[in-house]
Image 1 (tube, rainbow, N blue to C red):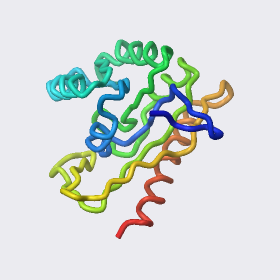
Image 2 (cartoon, rainbow, N blue to C red):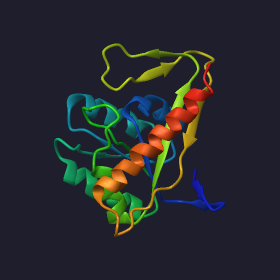
Image 3 (tube, rainbow, N blue to C red):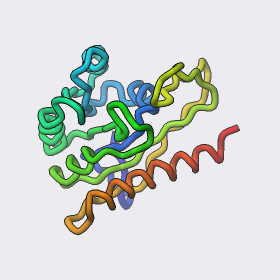
Image 4 (cartoon, one colour):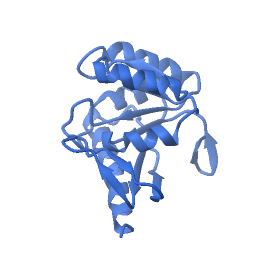
Length: 181
């Protein structure tokens, strides 16, 4: 699976998504060796085991604990040609606020950030979940959409890049919601 820039396939890139899209994306990217980060919490351990079974390259850590070790693993994976994905508003929110880890990963690897969003026409939302996670209902139509690549050139500040990532994700959300019934 590749994203495309100027009509040419790109092998390595870093997908940025909101936490609430994670369950759908886990199913969508299964068995494609995508590199991901999973927290060191109990829930993160369950998630890491599940993702490993589904063919993901899982690195442990988060912005609140073990992040440097997890980031080093992701950097190595991306530098050897893997695609990576990060929930940019994690691990505990606030929802829809981009954290700086994805920018650091992009700068260290030289790879672009690609916003990715999902929408679904019929879903169950997980009660009391801070991140608006959902599970598609049977026979629901799910849409996965990619935004424009975001480069992280030397001249751009952390704030500028995180704002561009947020704008890219918000733009996809608005675009997808226009087409929803």
